[in-house]
Length: 165
Image (tube, rainbow, N blue to C red):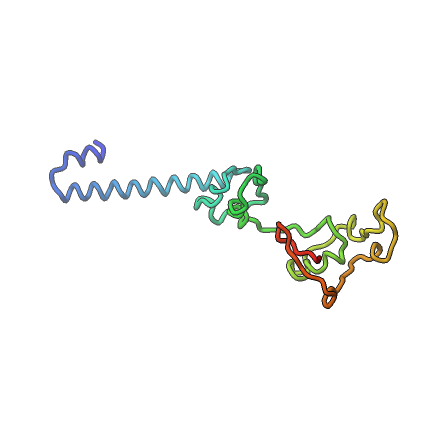
């Protein structure tokens, strides 16, 4: 006879309490076994798929991944993408956009000198571009202009970018 059947037939409160306690213990044991089975499946899987909110599941705690892809990230809310980011354990260290002298400040100040310019862009200058006339300002890698005392006023546009008028 099953424990539920015994519970229904039991007249003694002590017996009923013992059967209920046993049922609770069995239920806890079942949950633990299910959690271990799910953890084993996760550990053995080559690929795990989840929604962004599913990435915050306790079932994935203390799990790291070699790669995290966010499908249709352009359509996702940025805040939802951050759910999956704590799993990131490495960062990209090579940038392909700017001359190394321009990149130097951000590498030092924000990335503990870990960012490097790829050789294909490390020496890029404006004057090397087709159709750009050679001039002192076009040949400079980085040109900083102090506008203090020039009677110019900073303004912000619709996107909150600052410009001088």
